[in-house]
Image (tube, rainbow, N blue to C red; front, side, top):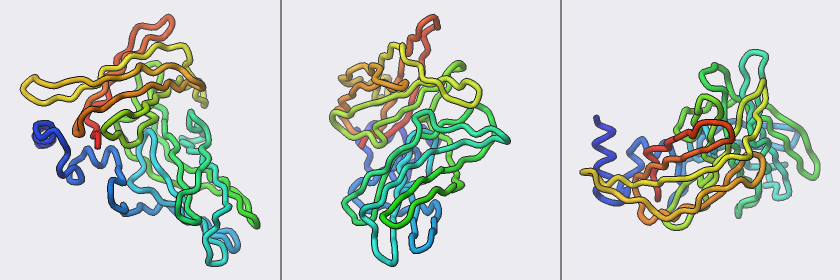
Amino acid sequence: MIRVSIFTILLVAGCAPDITETDFFRRHPSDMDFEPASVELGVIRDGHLTINVTAPDSLRMGTSVIRMEAIEDGSPVSGASFSVLPRWVGGARIISSPLGAVKFTPTDRSGHFEGAPIFVSPHSEQGHWQLQITYATAGTSGEAILPIEIQPSIWVQYTGRYYISWVQPVRPITGLDEIEFALHRLVGDSFVSLEDARIDLYPWMNMGADQGHSTPYEAPVHTSNGRYKGSVNFIMSGGWDMTVFIQHTDMARDTVKFNGFIVY
């Protein structure tokens, strides 16, 4: 009941005046207009090279931002390269992210790099997570396995036959956003992409008292590797729901809901 009350207050206001104190903020981390407090994920040391691995918020199912800081002999390394592959481990099973490894890109700070891998695990199975990090500088290269914790979230849904992952935007903002979903089945220990689905959307902002509105959008279409891209024009900040309708060949239509996220 408390969470519903907070949600109603946010929607009536038509904006998010103090979202950092709500559960919605934790579900969808934001860098907003301030420097966020980093979550330390680990440190990799290889000779004179030190790699600090952090995140702007707790890692969660779906897409999460991860940052690398490379220091060699006390100085930032601007020419480093990083590739990160999330892996779920359950006993003898190792299942890699359905979208594969992510290459990190340099930021505007020397020696700093950023990427957004996606985390998807088998439904209702117990296991733990690792980051397989491949790195290289002018003088050092190698690979490291970093154990991490992943929090549950709304950003990966299981239909009973396949998984739908919200890939982007990582942080929806008011205005025109590119939106991307990924559809995959788990076959054995590997994710297999679903590439011939038709997707439609229904974005909705509940203003309370059975009042609300949708917003213009372009339905996602398949691009590659089970990834479907479209766009949504969020006309107002605040709390939103997104219903996704999925029609796949020889399957009944599925309806998936990503409810209660914040548009900034």
